[in-house]
Image (cartoon, rainbow, N blue to C red; front, side, top):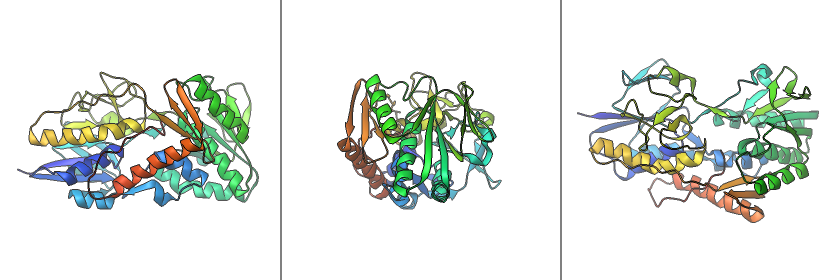
Length: 381
């Protein structure tokens, strides 16, 4: 009997799964990929795109060649729910699709719970498709205004890179405006070495960013800081913490306290072994993993092998997260800061390194013929 494998999301891990299917697809399976767009935007190049260093076409993978090579049926829809007990997923068009084996790589959403009062002024970094669509309009509005004020909320890598990219974009476009970055009391890049934090803080001050180390909540006029000050804003970009998709709460899968799917070392659901997951949507029971695209990329080939192994009845492989990941942080102009444990570096050569890695990643998955694995380094959280 034909078995149905359903892949939900065209994320980094599923790119590797599609390549695995194109290389050696088991007999007797029907494969469906559900994703809202035929293009997969690469988050590592988002700051460079905002800064004006890339076109959107250079920052995304066209799924069509991969899907054709893998013999996969592409369904351009959004998943809105699932029932693991009934083995089905619900789509935004009202249809339900049953599966024998399910793999989830849907990423995360930006947690904007403290900023919802901003209404239309709020622009979350994720979902990426929405940000790519809206940013050109934000830049156009800033160019047409005097004294335009933009606030970025989030002191992690995503927030820092975004604030510096926006500042560079404003400067390049001749925008009469100001950019503020709101981090918490923990400062910029918590968890990174102090030398890295010092380097990035220096870049931020040289760029003219307004730095605020207080918690912020949204208001109709902007962002209200915990010290009582109001940062007036025409637009607020949220690069705050990630949260799991809301529909997972009704999925009947076992979740962690943050609503993420609990998986074992093989990235199988601990409650439903016919469901696998990778990336921000899941959490390991045996290891702590940061919310980072690097883990989705590194786990991708193993996820592909394990899906094939389940279908073929062979042994599974475990994914062992590395203790340290190399972060390459874009700093607006063609300059970047490298961070790996306690080691750091900066300069245009770091940007060229990051640029080479990012372009190679997109090029790798834009080819229909499976090739050698590309080493992945971490560019965004």
